[in-house]
Image 1 (spheres, rainbow, N blue to C red):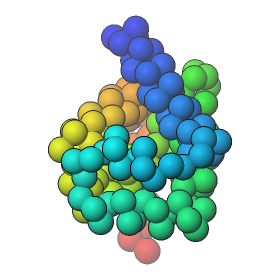
Image 2: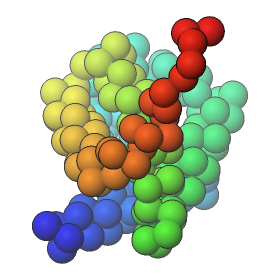
Image 3: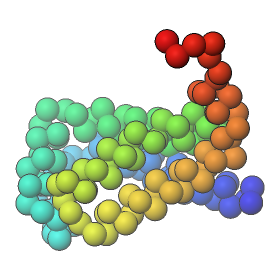
Amino acid sequence: MHFVRYIIRFLLALLFVYAGIEKLFLPYDPSVFKTNTADSNPAFFEFYHLLQSVGYLYFVGFFQALCGLCLIFRKTQLLGSIMLIPLILCLWMTHVFFSKNAFYLLFDGVIFFLNIMLIMPHHRDLQKVLLKPQKSWI
């Protein structure tokens, strides 16, 4: 099982480092983007163009690359996996509400599941930290 988690970690790291570098350094070409995602809802292209024009995708790209780099190293792997949860959920919900592209919905769902598989071996430690018993409700 350790080998499987290592392979998952490596693939997710590769995916997110590449996606981050792509958003940070490669020029955005709307015509190529529309060709590659032709099955998507037209509202998705407007939304993506808005995110690109205000610079928000640089923020997303930075954190994709950062999380991918964290996944590479054993010491920071858990941090990278935890940081990826809201990022993957935002990407997934973008496809749920805007693109409605079945491939990307499935792809993001699989990525989310694989990331959860990386976190699950640490659930007892996380439970101790995040759900620490309190003396009162407030």
